[in-house]
Length: 375
Image (tube, rainbow, N blue to C red; front, side, top):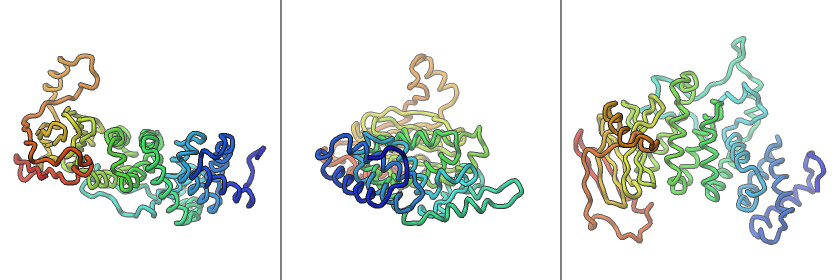
């Protein structure tokens, strides 16, 4: 029992380790007070500066997250892990927090063809008013070892496997944060989560994508230029991981198929959603035409292949609003310009997992007006 915050000694670390192992493997054997006490101590260790304490807290919190999540601030834990993973911690201050370092995720991973503005890069070293680099903040960042960075990355992935709704909600919150640093971290963290657990994040893909697009508001041009590199990397990871995500660089159009049957198009130049096509069943594949003026999408439930315009005219949008004057979700809804239904014989039996089916489906454009669906 601890009456006030203080440094944790060796005996307490040993006792805490045993309690956390029991909590992770045999949670029913621990009373609620013991779980709450252990969770509080782990949060204290996670916020400490000692590498040993941080690594221990990350390992025990992530392994026993199913037990401890009722006693901790889950959003705070996830934000802290993202900060450690990107070697940016809260004790670096305003300048240090803006010196983007992502060695654990790999430098130079900027998506060239997804450059959302003509030229940019990931946030560079913040300089003081006299033009000199803030060496103190760089030194503090350098003090974080790659072992801690790797532990934080593994911890985030482990928590994602246990509670993806909480992780996705926290990342969306970070992407909407006023701080450009927080949004930059979240963009990299989304890529880490997708690479590890793309199947689990699939259900939350529309919300995460909307938050990514919203973080690139053109009204904040300076912040947009600083985020474009991380956003480009994130878009590339999403496009590589999901057949239902497609990006067109020239028109800056991003199309995303969702599990609820919606196919959503975004304009990254304006940072807004431009149109929505409502289909029946999970949207398994999406592809944007070479000219960027059409989107093809395929839904598993209805076996329907549709071609539609992601950038409807202002007149068409006004006409739609006449039919749905009070329905906010209907704003931007479009109808397919062409559609066809695929016969049953081309699809595998319904007892095959949906994600396995999605991996066998490929949608592509062979020309400006020809779509190829491969199953």
